[in-house]
Length: 314
Image 1 (tube, rainbow, N blue to C red):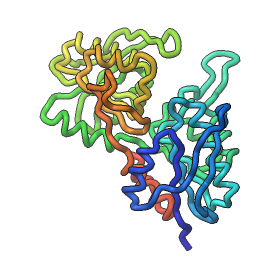
Image 2 (image 1 turned 60 degrees about the vertical axis):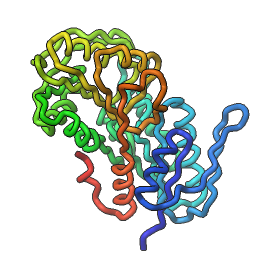
Image 3 (image 1 turned 180 degrees about the vertical axis):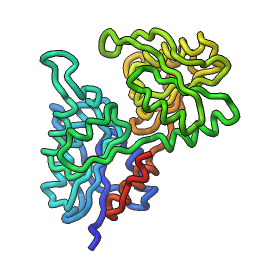
């Protein structure tokens, strides 16, 4: 007998959860997520979830620690309410860049977060476009890793129709991702040699490949302070590119990111709504946000019915 389904969300990205529910034609679960005056998170589930498959949509984006704590407390509340299963859905997985020891006496915070989510009571985890694929192995519960590429490719095909395109990886670590985009777009590939001096500080060196007379499309998993992106766009234009478009799954846009994008050579920046972005703010004129709600809704539907979701791992 199929269990009932319930979708809950915290305060991180309520519009995305509501859009997912519209695609699935189910109401958003009743949950009150508040804070005490000292900042402690408090969750109260407002409906019967006994034996139900409960999906918690909560990207751990900024403010990262608050949103992560809300996710953990909501999972615990559902567990204590006798939920049949609890599936944590973090379209953006915060702390994902801390996936290894970069120097002595530093943490592997991505593993710590995986342990916290598991200890809180999640039975399954789903995320999108992890910074490092090995994070899946940090979890001792089933992990589904989706990609926003189908959503981005559909838009980019239309945007770049009839143009000669070269896909540019902003660093050596992103070559596999860029190659996947270039294969599906039938485009050539270029790589930027980049040296990182400190966290959030990078120095782009030179471009390997030919962008002259072509539309350059820079592909990354996330855009944080946009320093790398702005430098990559400048190098592409200096090497003769017609125009530069950037795409990434996650628009973190912290610090001076929006200012840098506005002042850069970028013609357009395409991201998904895995992280909420208030459009209309200064610097967002070049940004296009695509929705991944339909993709996540399909994954939730398949998990609930016990169907395979491997076809979504494009």
